[in-house]
Length: 311
Length: 311
Image (cartoon, rainbow over all chains, first blue to last red; front, top):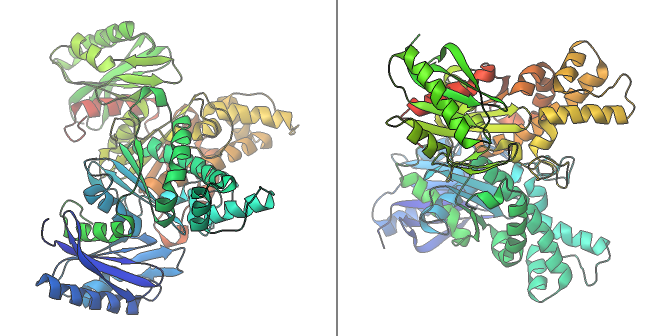
């Protein structure tokens, strides 16, 4: 176990979680504080308070990495958060001022998570990695040649927003037919509604964890719902692999972690069926994430500490 | 004008074309020889003969780059060519033997083309670039941080094979609903067939150049065909931009070059409509290619010469 390199922070819907991060993952207990990304001033104050608490444990000021949902540009400004209503919040500048003299990095939460899984989780040892996180929405992150793919403006890896069905189902982003519309936790619940509407035996309205529990209890309608979602996930994976050609694809996020045993077999079949020359090429492994909720804060901390991942 | 750095070779359906390549593009006349990629032995002999001819002009042996359609792995083996029926042809090894003592690089033709457009064409000055080539099929290439994106196995940038319509139209690859199925030159001809079947006023069976000519002559059915194809192209661009976040997207290939004035306006509208947070981010420019048929051989030559683009 190495010593702490940085402080990693993950901002959820109602709370932030912060912890010390070492090269191998997180170190010690997490600090939790109520806060939400939609209120930039209180969020920055809450981060600063959590950092002060962790400084006392570390004994010295460490770089701080913050992962948030939405489009984050290279300066750490959250330009657009479709699920939180935020526009143009300069979180990087605000945090740098609040934590004067310290290295700060603000990134998309799923970009942070792929760095976590790459350095300390399911994708350790791989140089080319794709992560999809299935939650309320679908996030994504890409590692190319061992480094986070940021793109020209910092917005690369928005894998929930590929279109897989022209004129398809609505999504919170306003873009119909996207990966998010068909494979998020929200989409799992929507498939359950459709199973009810179709009169499937035993089907009932249920959120994603309840669908997974029903499938685990042997209810066929629920297993079928997850198979349908898994097939769409496999198509999404094939599309991303066509662009990036990774050696491993990791499926995480709250809904992804719980549903992986049901989603991944269907996803692997659909992935192979939609991949060019699947029988003539090494195929990327499609595996569940290992770090759960901690992937984002671990990755954010590593990005803040890491000279290999410049902004 | 700089001196020649390499010999670039592009293999088409019935002929290969080879030429001297400098940092700014191709230099001097091209050598053409009958050959096709499906016959590896004769192809290598034809390349060697073209190289000998160009050596005489250059006065010294230069590195040789070869661009071919299909999945080319890091060793230069053409693993799978859906449009030519090739399987596992070790073109890199065969050429290295035939041209003993010389640096050889074999790559996908559209990967070569994006390097050409990046270094000497429409994307000069951009570090993050996407190219789609519309021809019989649809090829693609991606530049990240100034370097060709190759992926774990060499197969990155297969942008014709993203799925944009689940259970959609058949494609030569066998994968239904792909970008290639909706935006290739072949797809333009198929849209013309559908306009005929729909009884559109004036519509007739036509290949892609004839559709473009009809649109240029003011025939509304033909303009509508290209608008439909352009809208699908815009969706494809939005999906690739979600993954890669380039600053420029270049549309090339035989069909792309001819149809660009009709395709691109519709593509730009659909791109903006399918891009997350389009009003809150810098948007990639969507532009026609500049180098025409020469992009691939220029890029192949530059890749063979270039220490910045290791295999």
